[in-house]
Length: 446
Image: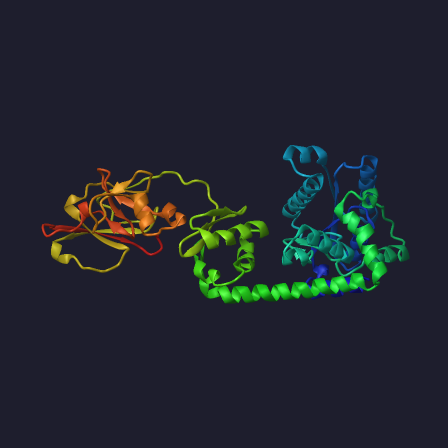
């Protein structure tokens, strides 16, 4: 079985003999056998054990068993105890969810503190089949039906190639002691019900069912991976990356009958999951301006694009002063200023990022700031004044772009230029203009 392990790891481009690894050992057959197999394969191992305190003396007995395993093999041992029921109650989550989060948070701490390459957990092929049915019952999409991956972040599952009966037979043949978790026999967990009722029923119908289901999961994985690659190839020309902002062409998605299927593969890297992607797809068909959030990103349905940006704390209302003698600034954006003595130096550069103003109307210091509710200016080429917010609506500026927009104001407070979009006519060049102020916003600024 050691050779089978090495072959399976090799197919996943992993050589354990060169790695410092942490084995998560509960005391059950799967994790204990995993530890012995990895050790025999040459991995530099440490053991970690979580005592969730859910089964009283049995939990403490398991901790002692794993500690003795570590001592008898000369393996470094890390253990942590949790008051799982209290934590679950305080956080308003299920005990199973709390235990899972506590476990993986503890693993991450050990990884960071001790420099382990991976944490190995004892999931095996039968767990994979059970996970498939759990996700099928819960209505998961294709990615849920793929089952557990060999690796996710720094968690690896080196026993996914092995059935439970193989693992227990190996333990018996090699006289490897392990404990049986009494909670595995309870029928009040969905996984246990599938394990003790559904799987035996399928076996009684056709003894090939477990291997057939595993083959189907593998084929499903291959098809989903291929579909994902095709989606990214298809969308490559319709997705723009600008600094930390991603823009996805809305009209391209609207051409497809099931844009939610495409969106799932495009948005998954940004933390968006199935239910919210369905809401995004529905909003795509019916509205503009709606906002959606993952743990890390914000998504806006714009007129032309779907706009993805990292979630940030609310920006402070900072104002940047620019004295007359300053010719170039780099914060909050890269802007250059040039006084031109003589109206004849005006050149119509037809560039939205360059503005010419009547220099004699400008009062210093200038102020560069974000727009605020109630801001009003006199747009060049229009009659009267207009609220900045209404101007943004007219030009169909997305919420993201509105938040990033800067204004340049005179010392007296009047808005002189909505940078990159429109001058205020009070500062525009007229026949009587004698001197010019040329302002250029460099392309990285907006």
